[in-house]
Length: 333
Image (cartoon, one colour):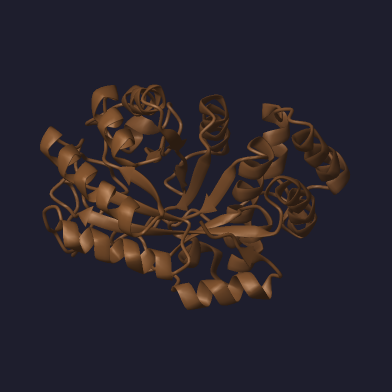
């Protein structure tokens, strides 16, 4: 993806890691240099990124489990999403699942050694009825299961966020997805500012933030830098790094812009810009990293197991073996 250049024309990766360890933000030029690292230099970049990851996250990995609690039927037109109104993908569509089903899946997540159970609903934003229904289920999960809970319910205001917070949700996921410049190219039914406002409302309600991006949708390196720097300003506790799964039937089907090594460059940049935060290698990791998946853990300290919203993913047993093979340990709740 990037032309080969002499390594002595690039900033020293060790110097960039030292800068991150000191808490200083990389400049745009330094970020561009990370993304432009020649393929043959990526192992060195990973080694320096590991110094940062290990300082702040040790040798631990967090497991998270997603549940698609309400699938499809979404009025939004996000080009990457199999649940949007533009999608013709062959996915299962259903209304909100039962309270018992939510409890059952939360127990399963706990058995999988997950630190957090992530409840996701499709749609522009949860109604008051849905918020109250989820709040009731969350109270039961916290009492019976004792697992961290993240909710992803679309656009949200402060009042609804407070209800979820009081019920026991401790983190809200709402991804920026891409840069402000590139957002109109992937969705028109809401804007970049709408996403920022949801995150700000959640923070005012006392919720921790989980917010990341999707890469491989046709964005430029400048867009990658823009969204990762915007996330540094928002300072979420958790940053999921997704790689586009170009699902058949979606507007972005057939979009293949990534290589395994470039995925690793993006993960390294995320860690160097967010040295002390949870970096989760998320959707699409199995598809794009392929045999290099284990190397992602030199930058990321968190993964999803047991699949994503409408696509399968690495199972718990395989994930645990990968973590053990890398000499790392699962950090449970």
